[in-house]
Image (cartoon, rainbow, N blue to C red; front, side):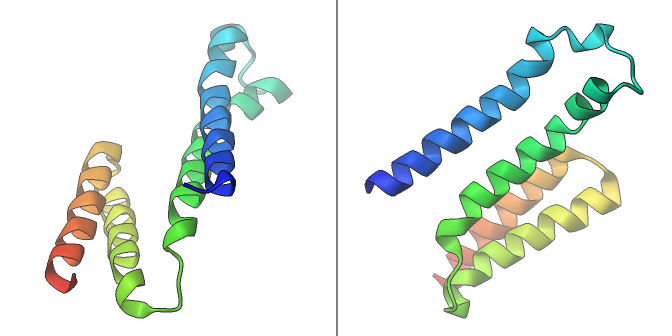
Length: 107
């Protein structure tokens, strides 16, 4: 494992932890919903998801279409199920299944 990859993984993990721990440490349930800090904390969930997505997809990005196909099918499955059902659990399972099936079918 390279030091660059380890550094990126540690930064992504620390950012994810901070996004999850900050609302608890700042007692977010007592904040005004329309306040500046309240809006910031409401955005941490989507920001954490985006951070994890970018950190996980960067190593897979390549101009070689057969290697990129599992990433594309998994991402499309997640988005499709999310917009159809609004369920994070079902979307995650569909994305993992689509990615795994694509890898299995096309190697």
